[in-house]
Amino acid sequence: MTAGRTVTRMRAEIGEQPRALRDTIEVLLPRMSDVGLLARGTRQVLFIARGSSDNAAVYGRYLVESQAGRLATPAAPSIATVYRSKVDLNGVLAVAISQSGRTEEIVQTLQWAADCGARTIAITNGPASPLAQAAEVALITEAGAETAVPATKTYTAQLAALAVLALGLGADLDSADLRRVPDEVERLIEVTEDSAELAAIADELAQARGAVVSGRGLAFGTALELALKLKESCYLHAMGLSYADLLHGPIAVVDARTPAVLVAAEDGPALPGTVALARRIAASGARAYGIGGGAALAGACSRALPGPRLPEWVAPLGLIVPGQLVAEALARRLGRDPDLPRGLDKVTQTD
Image (cartoon, rainbow, N blue to C red; front, side, top):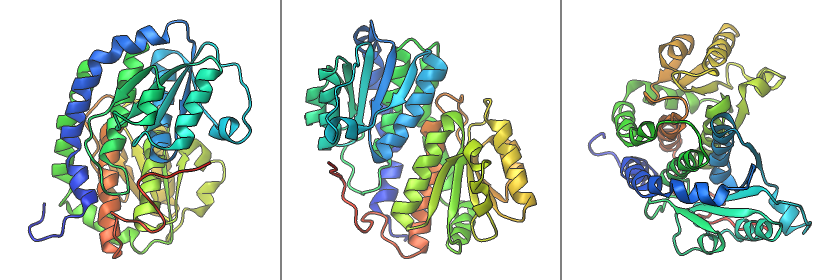
């Protein structure tokens, strides 16, 4: 870290992620059997979340469907809290995700799911929270207190919990890959935080009127989360999209003043399409910034930051970290306080 630079709470908490991930993985991997036992007799997963937790749930959905062979869908909490509808959820495993575990809408929706016949799991950083108490199984992350409003370490800890969930649901994956994540996140922070590419991307984004952030498959949740970080920390109009949706029309907004940030693992079926998209954007005269994707994506982009050297299924746990560093650096470059974005609180209550 550069000597003499003011360290924001957001930056400090980005740096705490290797420890938070180690602790979370160590505590939760032994809970795989609890997940498996509870899930017996269920066939579908319903994710209940908002905000960054909802972006984590997108990763969970792709992971469960692609690796555990179960249909997974996002819940619409208003069905429970506004419309108060009764839905047959027999055979459903409801997974509620909340950093604090104190968002009333999420707690109420999990309770509603149980009343409708679902089995229930909570993923939260709040061990004594109402959400943890409402669930049959609570997967408690070990991120520690997070004081900056933008979620960083609590988000990646949620991803680790979702990886454990997938393993507990029978995904044929190697848990050793998950154990490698903390060291790889630590390496990413070291090689990214003072890099010339990070500074240049922040300087160029400071001149942008907006940005598109895109990924696909297991990296789609990362794209949504990075777009959220750019919006809430930097007040940049950032749109998170699957690259398939981007190609269906919104690519028209990508131009000289609206660059694209493309995220991808270093392997996997979504990488070739991401590289092709970067080449198309560059050919149009717009800028494309790559995060991850190895040499192939870096070579197709205007500028690029390295991603994690991890298999695709756990890559999102590291892939967001360079994006977090971009958002924090851009906020400082713009004179924003990333710790206390305007109009936001750490716990958001909705009806």
